[in-house]
Image (cartoon, rainbow, N blue to C red):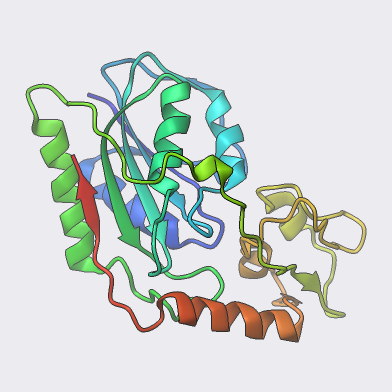
Length: 247
């Protein structure tokens, strides 16, 4: 069985969890944060998808990335990474998406990773024990004589819910040198090549441009920064949620 670990990770938290698993189970890792190469998968392969959770949903860019992956009833394990608040309907949404693309869902997991708005929330997660739990879970799924289809948790009416979008739009400071790193690495192509300004309608507030800025000159306006850090802490700062597994 050929194993592939795909990850969408704007600020690196989801990537860390994905890469650590790939090393442990000897899988190929594929970064789909900015783009996805055309590839074909067979029913004898295994796909493991790591995606972050934004307000209980998966990033819209993930839908586009999966259009480039062709499969043949390929088994898939879904891993929702969230900043210590809740996964809500993200696993079910991801399940519906991969099934439409021809995958079959044989397992799912919820893992805590640093929050994109306030990395102090979920810091150092998943820890060593949690990473071991995930690897053991994946190996348990693979070891089954026949990998069975699994229903993911969530509200089937998630599509009818209003998407929550916080008004958090990074902008360049005067120190910006226009190097283009943020422009070239934005998952949504939401940054203009003119003064590196953000296109608000396209921005998903993933904070990747801030995380990757070569001069640390990209940031949220002060009131937005206070809002984002306060919201992240209020949503999960005092919790110690644990991973969950579905098979």
